[in-house]
Image 1 (cartoon, rainbow, N blue to C red):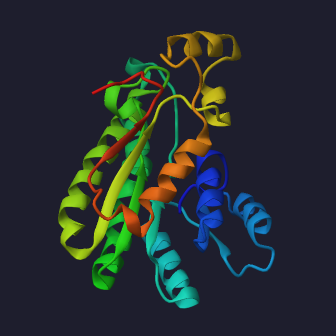
Image 2: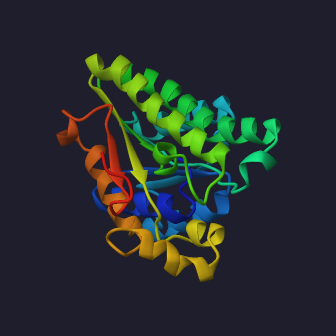
Length: 240
């Protein structure tokens, strides 16, 4: 999985490992992944690490090859890595917009493409993409580049789901609203947290553990009849 070094990514990695999955933890911050791998398995038998920059297709291929060499195959990909850069709409330059799109949407596309080929050849696979409420409602605290990239991830989920469905491969997305994570607290000033919570119908921030549990389910063999879906986790902020 990508972006496993901290936050929601680390929670998903822990949950997958608890559920019996062998995990390869990737991030541009490899030391963070190493710390998590030591927490999960000091013997490095069921948890490996790799440095992966999602803007580089060769990194995805290298990680896929490394995992197949070690364990024989890969069954699950979780595309979680993303950058968040909150900025007023008219202050975003085109190169900034393109950079965020390339990392968030481009990284998800590349992961789905490279691992999707492996899954198609094997006749089985699970892909879980992390989208966002911002991609559904246009974003509030986040910038337009982040919101647009997450909207693109929702569309890519459907495109890959449709093409890979005949080959035993499912592709789903999870779309979190405001989570109680360091990333959210870094974007939203502490004085505004209470105001944010008051605007959420259930009157609380989301628990990253719920996202992790959903990812485990979607990564399982029993989720075979769910594909191309967006799983909303937003406390009632966006209903459809």
